[in-house]
Image (tube, rainbow, N blue to C red; front, side, top):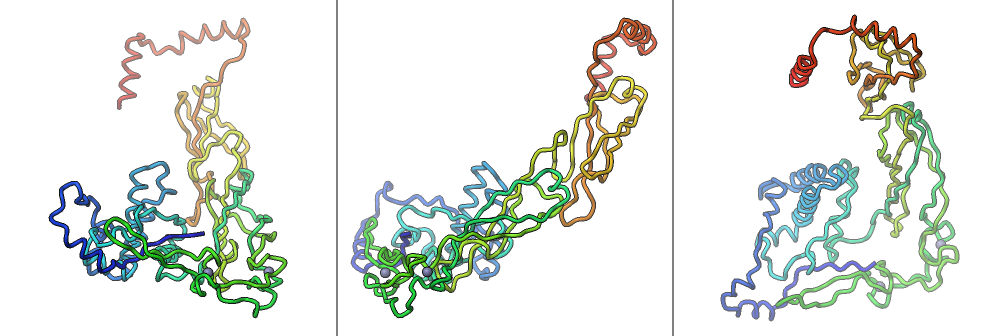
Length: 408
Ligand SMILES: [Zn+2]
Ligand SMILES: [Zn+2]
């Protein structure tokens, strides 16, 4: 992996060139429509490191793509707060921004392409796993040492009733793990590890690059050693010098009752081993989804179903029993004079609520059950009832009454 990051440094002679410029024509003046970084984070210039961090955390949670799927404006905001935080959380970059604003010499500190955005897990915005991402953006100073191993995502599907009751599960996954033969150093013999000749053990290479009128110092990972500054002359046979290898791991976890499809459980330290011996392992995220129920739809912790009921039960009222996911039958009490499309609520029989106590509700939408083939005598009885059941209103008055009810 070669990450190119641009750090500061404007070479003296280029500044002179810059100053010699007579007032630039309007075409060459960069139009800065960027918002002020402090304004983006909603903090003032005297805000402490902690204020900046907590402002970022709360805005990033608000605009995170997981919370705003397919929302372009939230996506843009998410990137904007990331960029502001990348600069304001780095003391050197912050000092430069405070002095020059967006028009600093040397162009964007993120390189010619500007800020590209970074991936942050929404869970890390509640804990604190995002700092390392930002501290590594400005490569020259931020050390790659102790970098956390990669996070993994595993999808796990469960039956509907397990989502209701919760369960214990066990999976076997392949994870990049520390090689036991060499204890992760990549070499059987620790003395056979020498300093990389290309980067002299720094792990990074610096070179000068011209961008516009300026010369910048560009720092990138050393391609010869992959950035760790070491060369292994006698690589471990099992891991080929990588220090890590794929291994099967058994992971046990509990699924809380009432879990929603799409919830990600985080197993800290179950992700990939770090490339750096001192770095902690990444996280394993287990995304839970569940099967559909034959007739229920979920709306959070509430359940929704449609129940076809015959005309007589709607008119006279009835109690209808149907098996339920909690093991006890669900009794739907239909009040007399019900209409198709009306709902009956059964409190406390939905899914268990996460953290809070209690359960959601079940909502039953009443439908009119289609009538089967009618016998001659049934037809006759219905014809007889028709007059008796009629409220005597004309079609026009009925339409009017219905419209009034609907518009209420
Ligand atoms: Zn090994
Ligand atoms: Zn090297």
